[in-house]
Length: 215
Image (cartoon, rainbow, N blue to C red; front, side):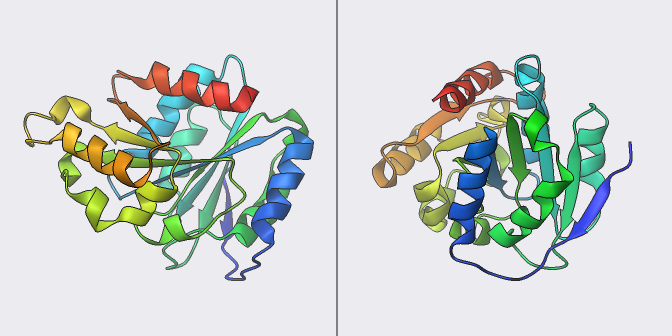
């Protein structure tokens, strides 16, 4: 499968987010923005979600990276339409870039479009990209001190995925502390504890996403 590589155009339009949302609403396509640090397991999580939803929904993926198409190749291997967005050094994806990529997908035959944002806990949280849902991923090896250090990411996300949860005891990860800190700044955030590799906990996340899509 050929993977298209699209360069990010650094142009900001404050109305672009709303424009994309309306357009996707008309097409009945649900856009999910997945954010997290490098190595948090974003791609593996996305693949696990796809495996749980692909029998019911047609899914596409936009893979955001500063360079390369390594993650896009992983998505293509499971037969999912994917476009690589290379930002050439930018630490986030902007709405205008999503707008420019959408014509690469057959939106009339798509139900869910997942964006894997650039790997960090700062910049992606600041920019709306037309998404209907924001998901933040925090992996156990990163440590349990990230919520007070990077509050905007967790304040603006609809859900927190604590990934690699099977390593909790090895890294002395205090999940209750993290959960309380998130709920203090974002009482509406849903919190899931998963292992994306063996898919423990993924079914619950998939059902939560499905409920959002239906609504």
